[in-house]
Length: 96
Image 1 (spheres, helix red, strand yellow):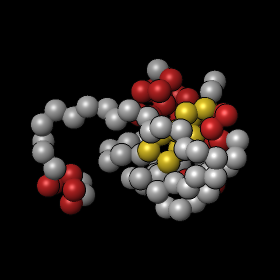
Image 2 (spheres, one colour; image 1 turned 45 degrees about the horizontal axis):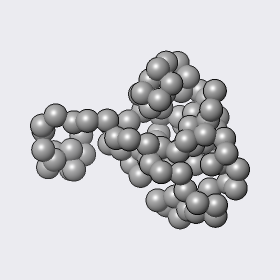
Image 3 (cartoon, helix red, strand yellow; image 1 turned 90 degrees about the horizontal axis):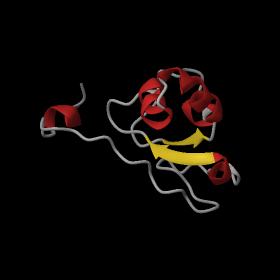
Image 4 (cartoon, helix red, strand yellow; image 1 turned 180 degrees about the vertical axis):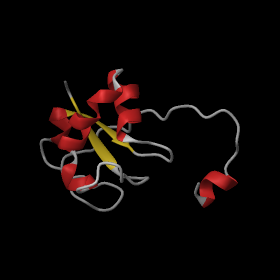
């Protein structure tokens, strides 16, 4: 539980809609350049508190087991540990 979780309203939380697709040459929250073809391969999603790759896969694809596809498409952003995603990261959700 982070500080913002503690301070935030404990009322009903609604899922966050996927972020709008970035323009060509756009950067994510951390200033990383998005690949030029990332918008053509699928939607983008900005990680929020409490997210996991399986939770994002369940909400986007209807199947939590498809988290592997999200991880493979975003290895450069996520790194070697798929359990370590950070709030504010912009992930590409590949079309399946």
